[in-house]
Image (cartoon, rainbow, N blue to C red; front, side, top):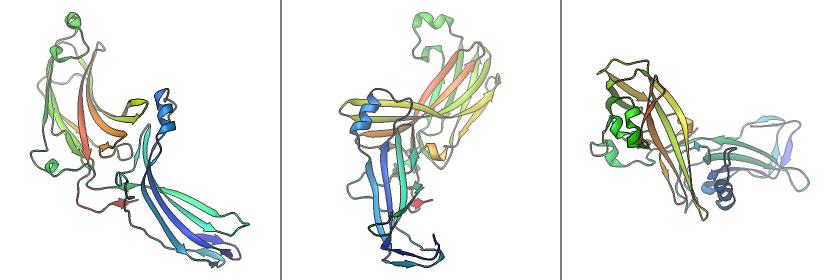
Length: 288
């Protein structure tokens, strides 16, 4: 929509749609990430240019000019990836409208971002069948703890916790599910939490950098649960901070789930589960 007072002559109106993967510095970024920022150029995913209106004159008042374009990946790119806003890796799409006003007048330029969902991204057929839906059982006790020296195990409370995640491959549009059961614990439990963590990798000549950040924390239980009671695990994936798992030549975005049991004496029991996110096939690529 264009608003003019008294009309406006122009040399044409052009719409450009662009998408890219870019490395963005954060206040937390130090050292190797600054080096990456200077060596990794944005990866172009989408490049469309549409001449909407030829040279002419816009009438006085408001003028609506409809346009549309298809989302086709740029030849030679890694494909159309879903919009994603991370700490260092960002996948963004923008539409720019430019009204050309001639040699001695400044062009009018407006830009707006849009989000892309790509059904089928990171999807494999076996993910919808029994072979791809692999249950992840777990059993926790003092002997399974990592980063604890054997000499210090005598100071660790005795506990036995079991359960499962229903699958390590997850449709991003559906919740992560599972169960946890506290079979025994010598200390009272303060809370049980489920954390969603994204892990971003960037690679360049300087090396490989990795950054893990927590993006969601859900309390599963508050207080000491009844021993032997199966507690359901249920977590939706936040739309703007997750995406189907990305793996490219010089960057990756992966996701993990941490199951955290916090005891009253402030001991913390943690189990980590790498998961793979995908978006189920079935509809066309869409933008909003």
